[in-house]
Amino acid sequence: SAVISQKPSRDICQRGTSLTIQCQVDSQVTMMFWYRQQPGQSLTLIATANQGSEATYESGFVIDKFPISRPNLTFSTLTVSNMSPEDSSIYLCSVGGSEGGTYNEQFFGPGTRLTVL
Amino acid sequence: GESVGLHLPTLSVQEGDNSIINCAYSNSASDYFIWYKQESGKGPQFIIDIRSNMDKRQGQRVTVLLNKTVKHLSLQIAATQPGDSAVYFCAENKAAGNKLTFGGGTRVLVKP
Image (cartoon, rainbow over the protein chains, first blue to last red):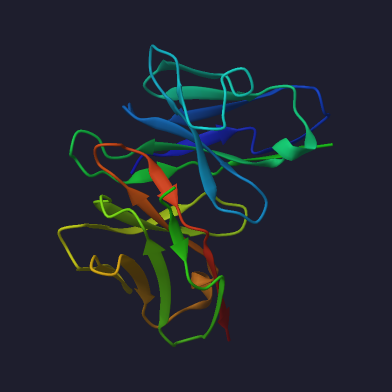
């Protein structure tokens, strides 16, 4: 399985500021995703990070709030913009996943624990 | 909308006993299911997966059962150990859609 790292591992931020989270994979991967896990809850998909094009966002998530970059097949960033306390969550990137009828497991990074004051 | 959910939020198990974690799904078009384990402060760790053309799959100390008739998925952990204490999530994946939908999670507490 791919080795996935995220930076920072945790941060405490003031409301109204923005934080950019980095996800680095040790091998080239086609599919990369960003998830949010609110305190004590399950994971919710934010968007699919597409290499060379705009990310594909899920319902309830917009590019202005969560801009994503994917400059190559091993790296992606997620920015949480104009933060409020409601954005306090763990943000996780994942790689892999099924496509085109091929079943492949998704692997997750360690997560970035964000607290907004 | 369609979703994946769990019957039990918390499961307390005596060390050495078997654990069974259940999950219900509602999308009959789902064709691939994954179980993840998440320990405190860590990301979800892949445990085992199963395709919809199977009804059982075994790994090391774990077995996943799929009952498509009643849209039910379960994870069995044999001889539960303290290191098995974690939150377990089932997830649904459609190969064509390539998106994971997660269930609510079950916390497993292993008592010594």
